[in-house]
Amino acid sequence: MSDVEELEALTETGHHVTGASGQAEFHQGLSDSKYVIVALSLAVITGFEVSLTYIDIGPLFLPLLIVLMLIKFFTVVLFFMHLRFDNKLFSALFYMGLGLAVFVYMVAMFTFHVFDL
Image (cartoon, rainbow, N blue to C red):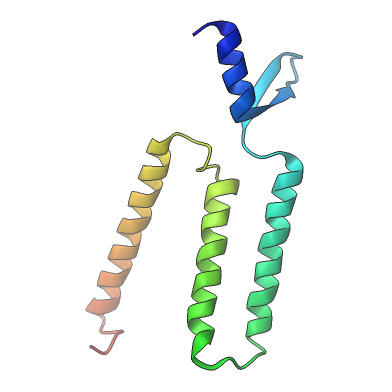
């Protein structure tokens, strides 16, 4: 791949930033305005979660809160932790660690009979 083709590929996947040294650098990820939009979306979801605590929606309360929590969790992981733009190996390592942590937590919960089964 020539330098020109490599430069074009970098331009398509990231955005151009002029670094402190005056040289062109390429950063993968969203633009600053898109990060603000993601942050505002997270704030709206959080506001909705807080408002749910004041509304009686019966048995839908907990499942809805869990779904909203998962949406916020994966949004933060994908965009602010940059797993969406990083090498897939980093994503795999993160999700394996997350799975292991959830597994160990569940084993501890069952060991102390938290769930009445």
